[in-house]
Each structure stands twice: as structure tokens, then as C-alpha cells.
Picture 1 (cartoon, helix red, strand yellow):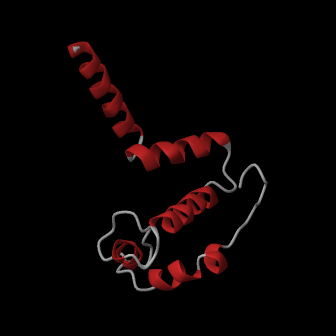
Picture 2 (picture 1 turned 90 degrees about the vertical axis):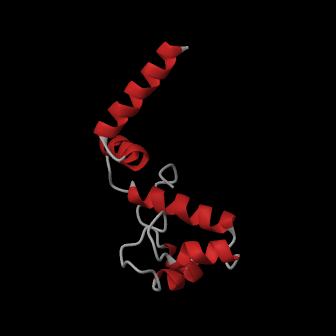
Length: 103
């Protein structure tokens, strides 16, 4: 989406079924990742929504989250999403170094 320079997109029409299910999630700001009581993830587990469709939704939602950010902000967002923050990234690096030393 960034390559196409789409500045704003609305996933509610394309993923109307997911939007309707999201209204039944326990938390209003549910990201449908690991939150308890997520109606969308439950629908995927039941087979009401295909895992591929849900994956496509998540990928497009992630791209929308990067809209309007500069490259440094995008990198920071990716680190936060993957590790929870820079502190956790440093811990992971330290763990990897210690593991490589043991070999």
C-alpha cells in the first residue's frame, strides 16, 4: 500500500464480516491478536472466517498503521510490535549472543 501511495484506506467494506464480529469483542480496542474474549479469533478457530482472509486483514491493518509515519517511526513501530520495545530487543540480542557463545 505504501508503494501505491494510498494515503487512507477503509477496510470496513472489504472486511465487513470481520468488522461486524469485532463489535462483539470483549475490548473495544481489540487488535485481534492475543486479547481474551476476541470474537474475531474465535470465528477463525471455528472456521467461520478462513485463516488466509484473517491474515490478509491483519497485513492490511498493519500497513494502515504505518500511514503517515516517517522511516524512523516505522522502524520504531516494527520493533515495538515484534519485541514490545527497545529494552526487549536488547534482551533478545543479549540472549542470542550468549547462545552463540555456548556453541
